[in-house]
Length: 281
Image 1: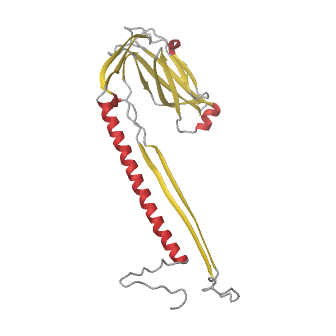
Image 2: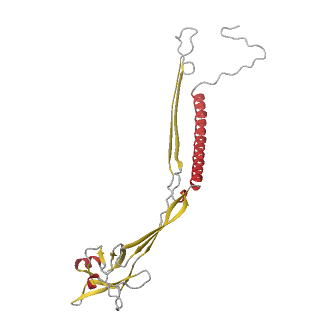
Image 3: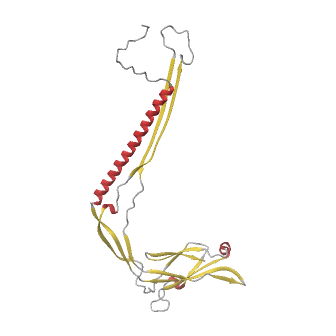
């Protein structure tokens, strides 16, 4: 029997030694990384399923809980634009009508891996004959690796809570404008003007007279004037409930605007009743 030889009993199975070297190590690393990726994927799916189950259970509990909420808020405004009465119409609704549990989801799950394997073997690369008898061939192995897992769990899109419906019984504005007309001086167009009729009515359409309206013109380069100091015509007269607003664009403002009428934002209000219109001048 030669040195280092062993006797194998009859019937014994001899298992080959696991392969060594960079190729084998990389192979084992690839298997390990693939298994890691699989486990992470299954974990993410399981976590998402549990989050969804919890969301459904919470939503079910909330849907079975009812509270009193203001479904409709009714306002009554008098002829002066002042709120005279307000009524809140209460309705019993499930909590899920205005509050929903916040759903969460995995917005990003990323895996990155880097494996480096190196080997130096005196027997396979080159021999060093000066080694003492019986010592194994010089061998050097190193394995390094980096695995980065990035996972982001964040709320999904918010569910908007419904707001009460506001019903306002209040005066209304009706705005009727004519076509803009050129301002001509000495045979030359020097500007443009627009006359606008504004009518103040009650909710039933009847005119409201003797009320002073307020105005705000967004474009400072546009001059304006209003008939009767902004007070609506007396009831029972041909101009009941109306005033006339005149807008003018002249001079440099007109030259800059050119031939095309430019939109001007006009705000009109009486108390808490207000409206904003865009007029071309």
